[in-house]
Image (cartoon, rainbow, N blue to C red; front, side):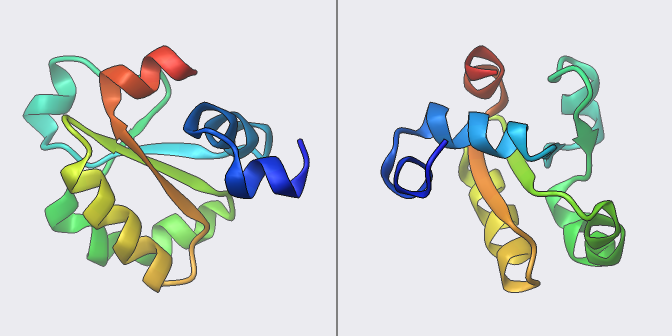
Length: 101
């Protein structure tokens, strides 16, 4: 996938590009929400704890796709991660993201 598509392509293309780079999916919902259903292989780091997990996330040394129930919390998490130098994109709601994978 070319840089132009990565920058200007649709969200599904961007998700696939991140996946091709070995991205991890971080679900920022609460633990109880996560236990009710989640994307296979995703990691649960609730939004309220994400700041304290920055070092752990940096240690993955991989791009990150955030998700939650609707996309609001994952957008906040993506902003926090980006501020800390992590390559990240907001995947939005986990059900929608799962359908794009």
